[in-house]
Image (cartoon, rainbow, N blue to C red; front, side, top):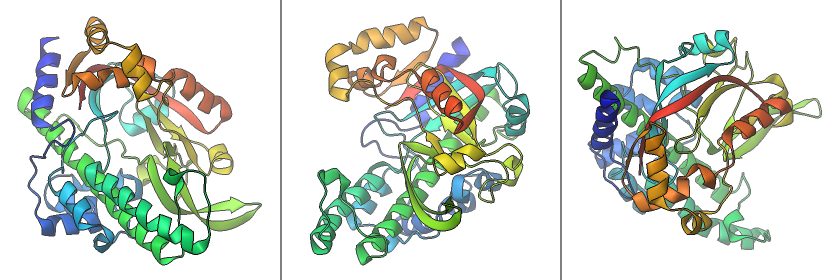
Amino acid sequence: GEMKEKLAEEMFQKIPVGVGRKGEIKCTEDDLDRLLAEGVDWAVEKGLAWPEDRDHCEENGRMDMADPSFVSKRAKKRGLKQLGTLGAGNHYAEIQIVDEVYDQNAADTMGIGKVGQVCIMIHTGSRGLGHQVATDALTTMERAMSKDKIELNDRQLSCARIGSREGKEYLAGMASAANFAWVNRSCITALTRKVFADMFKRTPEEMEMHLVYDVCHNIAKVEEHSIGGVMKKLLVHRKGSTRAFPPYHPNIPKDYQSIGQPVLIGGTMGTCSYVLVGTVKGMTETFGSTCHGAGRALSRNQSRKKLDHVQVLERLKNDGISIRVASPMLVAEEAPESYKNVTDVIDTCEDAGISRKVVKLRPVAVIKG
């Protein structure tokens, strides 16, 4: 119990969390341009990621269509200070324990097959940089829509034709933001490995702190899928969903060819999380995609009105979960009651045949913005 508290405190101190928090990892403007183009390759070169981590990232942690010249000055300014930061909202770092194993072979292949084993799950994205890329694109796309006579009923759904100048520039900016997100998670992984190494006086390698997988859940990707028996090149946009490719798909790591792509499903603060694998049926039914979490049951506003953050924190403590949070007032928005039941969602996806359960993880410490 005492060790768990110490680890939670140390991670909270070393990983910058909360709205607008600045990172500890030094990043110059030249570095930023390089990492936006190169993704995890840059992190490996700087010693912020292990070479093997690359193999366990979706796209090997680098989208080649990225072009930093299509990321605005303002977006870059926001990103410059935020490398290696967790942010706020539903983003977190959790220390978890393997609670149940549903597929021993797949779990062993991923290196998480022992009940009681410690894992760390990190959920964060491209921070203020990605947010700004999206905001900039809304303005550009609105102009493109009026030019191309596209009418939509919601400003948030603004779009552009994929092959248009606006479409191509957006994809180059979005891919740059995705590369930033992979590097950001690599930096937090590096900080986490260091915290554990300092605490246990052993190297991360000795403790086998290998990356299981790094997956996106808000991204558009050019992929090949079968439509009516014909292979076609599509732009698959997964928003709040996770890629879940089946066994033997060429785009998944060689280590996981026999089991399918690992899918990480983060629970809500204090509830369990899951690791799944993709299926052949998912490839035909949902373009190789499954859920990315539980999904909200109450809006952020409703959560704040209905739930008391002090009670939410107290209940986590009573459940034996160490919690460190930068913005306690925001805790109600992320309380378990604010979300659907994650187990129901996972079981529904399994029943539909679009993903399979491998491992259930239970949190023992939560670090949040």
